[in-house]
Length: 239
Image 1 (spheres, helix red, strand yellow):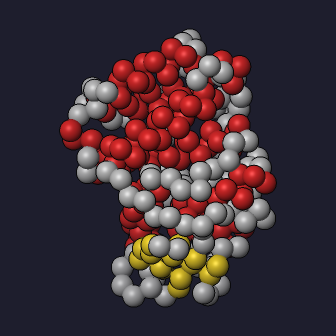
Image 2: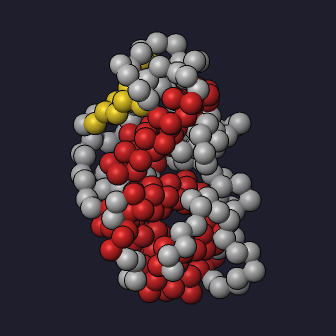
């Protein structure tokens, strides 16, 4: 579960830094490498945000996605890694460094947004699993939030819901079509985790809504994200 120091870091003053998707991806990969390098004992630690996964599984997934892009066969964002591969954390990290250096120029654009979003989701999953604070500022947030708000918007439209506005200090998005009928405000960490299946519906309802949120809560379940039944991490304010 997220620690109090984690929540405090997440609630730090906003600074909206934007980087090209490739640089955001590489910065996030370096963060994960720094968390795991030289720590083989972390391999079997469970990752609550990904039920049934260990830290090794999470890392293998990220390598699998990267290898798929290099090979021209991108994987689904949450596909489980091959359970038969027995490589340890050190070997997986070395492979990931080698493979990421081969990422094609086509990484930019939608593919870059998808990879950046996926790796940020899992860096945060990993930090929560290890009890390590979330960075107060992370360059992968802008592109990742752009993508997940777009994805959720399709569900809002499919469900026939009025549009909603999501706001965080320094940025806002209209999700769906037309004039927003409701505004929901929160720390960007809370918004991102809410949009990527890491917050319960009860936690999402505790964000700062301008109108009662119940009508829009079903739209927070959208492929491939599904809110958990029970909370496994705290909100940015520690609640």
